[in-house]
Image (cartoon, rainbow, N blue to C red; front, side):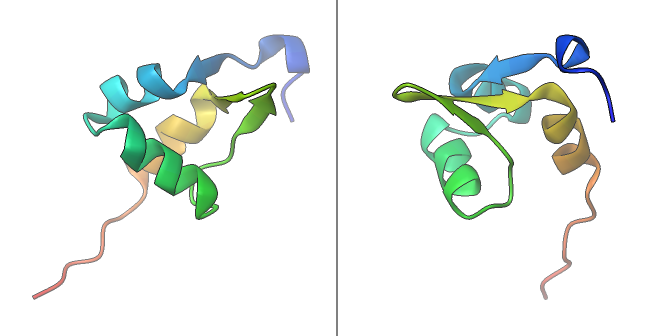
Length: 63
């Protein structure tokens, strides 16, 4: 487990830009538990490692 000082947190807007989705999609992923996040006051921060892991997750082939 990395030291807390080694963890880089991203804003929802930064995550949306990296994943090329809307901020609303990021919020949905966070609320669905598919993307871990930490709440600071009224905003969320997502560990950069979680974004990397989500981007490398296999996608289901439907149809």
